[in-house]
Length: 286
Image (cartoon, rainbow, N blue to C red):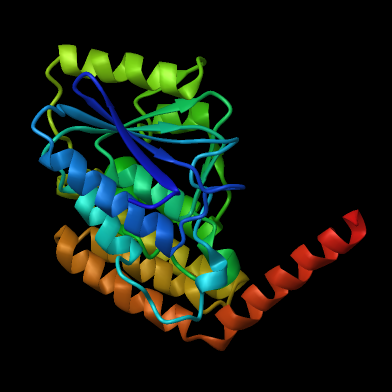
């Protein structure tokens, strides 16, 4: 276990707490700590359900972009999300703040999700010349359909909690403190004898003919409005793979496309620009 992840137990509920301020960024220490915590919770015979939440003002708000361009360190995000999804005990994510990028991919790997009413959800990777590389292109279409997945992944705009509830991205909204709300929902799931519910095993709900039309329209839209984008057409290809491949093969395809984006000069330039703008904000505030 690492200092950024704490594992405790209350009755039959394993409580996994992420505490990696300021935004619980999903760096290597956090990924490794989460994998260890989930593994230990699974092995504990007294644990009936695993609950994941984050300290501070937000759930995991994305990857640690300082690691971009560096050699990948295991576990990579795909490995972590697959391990979470493959847990043989129900996993509940208690969400608040900004559930973005890798944070949303972790949430999608959990079997149940509840959120504070002010929570925002998004996959903004295209703005950094990337695509979601932790299973987001494979799980999101299975949960909300092709049209919404294309909009969220290629458009990159976040959605609010009410829309997430309407789409089925979350199961319920809460207003209490996250730990209190999470334990209440966890006990409800246990009382209902809720089963493990893996998004990756679900079929994409969009009919093939409709999906084909959506992909054709999106391809034309990218060519018209973002002809120079390296990541957008690869995001589309990854989402398309979710409609025709089982999860593991789709994840392999996603990973290959993600690595293409990581190697792109466009990705490097966009991230350099991101850091420059962030530094400019800090300079103005100092």
